[in-house]
Image 1 (spheres, rainbow over the protein chains, first blue to last red):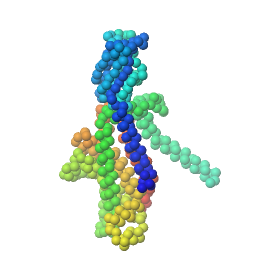
Image 2 (image 1 turned 45 degrees about the vertical axis):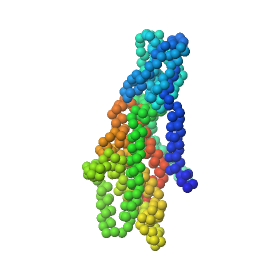
Image 3 (image 1 turned 90 degrees about the vertical axis):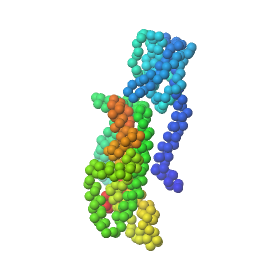
Image 4 (image 1 turned 30 degrees about the vertical axis):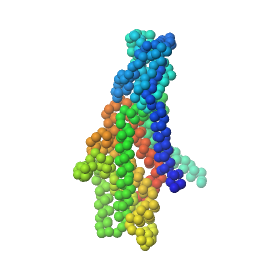
Length: 133
Length: 273
């Protein structure tokens, strides 16, 4: 029995199975669909009432999945993201931010943006997609 | 070891290393592209991955039903491997026993190895259809559940076992099944490993047969999924190569785990067949 337990035919599959189990436990604990962040203006001040749009990847393009508004501190959050590849863009009147791409390790991964969405001074112009969140 | 022998050994190893590098370069390129998604036709090419990441693998996992394809491939390969070990061992043992027409049977089996699978695919399809196994896991594994090459690997391995050992077992009252299970198979681990590796790789990489007999997308295996992915995602080089790596990885893993036994089994088959 000890010989079997030490053989590579047991050790390698068992190690893979253990890694998969641990990963799935981690995923189940961190997949609530939360995406949070902050919107600031060109001078770095929080913007209240700005609209943040969440786009999800749909095979060939990004389609709008949800939108929310920032609170008094410029913070926003989405609670029901179920995609692994999303884009975020803030819009406030004629101002908008760059559309940033968030690549997640699994569907619905909880993520808080380190960098805020910064509204651009140029009005009415939607910036091209790009940049990591 | 003399100086001349040392030099020759060094030269031999240098040549082997160079050949290995040439053989491994395509695999490295696939792996590198899967980590970067760069254009494979870019000139000059970058030898090292630029800003590598694993998100292409995440894309593959979610953009197509990869877990389903993986499960199908694992089930089909498990059935094929089990069938190979059991059926080939029985057939290989039978060919070591004396019976009328044994030589003709061996010649017939050997000559059948010359017929390509494509030539027998219509009868194979009709038989599978009559058995009601189209679009099923058993039907997917059926043509690979016994292969002639592997039968002869078992035959060669069983013939290498001393005859006196089998005679002693027979005198002790063991029947053919127990001789096979208790005496021959425990002494043929190399042949078993060779059967497992070959059956796994053949069934894992099989494309044509699953393409013909599967009706539902849910029954497709990884090679079919790869073709489907290619038709959907024409411009995602990184994800495509990540898919290729994910298809290749299990076969490589199985081979690396069993490589020493696999080599022994093949060598025995080559010298004693």
